[in-house]
Length: 112
Length: 111
Image 1 (spheres, rainbow over the protein chains, first blue to last red):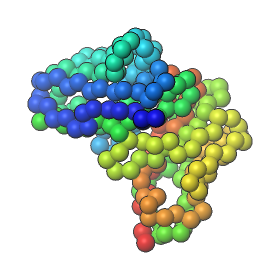
Image 2: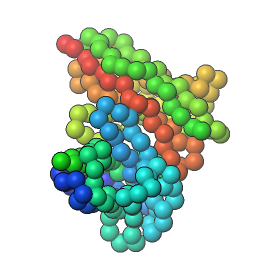
Image 3: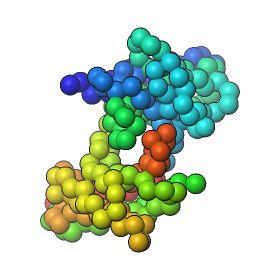
Image 4: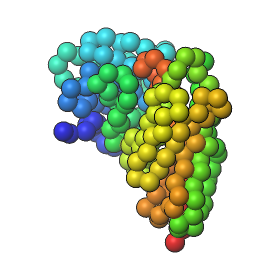
């Protein structure tokens, strides 16, 4: 059973560009969570989604950030007009029943 | 709101030493509690969990007991190895909508 798959693993964007991070949950998992980890800091919750629904987006910045989990295909975290402060590791996690979450390997975004 | 407070690091131990990483929590209701481990450049891996008071989670020689009376979930290992060097995160979830993580404790084990 493949784990949570994230891509790209590393992404470099210039300020003002868009970053698009993808997450395929584990087979049978319909709950997806996105977290951000800044250097030397802990994990910050961003958003929790189920198929076609955003359940909790209380951790998402109000502007430039959006997330989706369509009926078909991976979950996408989209960051528009990136700034240097968006440089971080973005982790996706999935769960079968929202009881225990399993993380992917992360996507490291660097904004130059 | 729900939160987790864990012992600040970094922690440096000699091989075969006893490890304790403290974790206390604040939550409404009866949360599930977790320990995750993160190796450099990787994602977090579930180490162990406990879902109700007095439960003991264990895995790979690590243990933690859910203590409702002290709102704690301390991580312990009797004899650490160099390969245990990593960052350890305590976490909780009350509703499944959010999983709250501590700030992480970095452990380095020296031969």
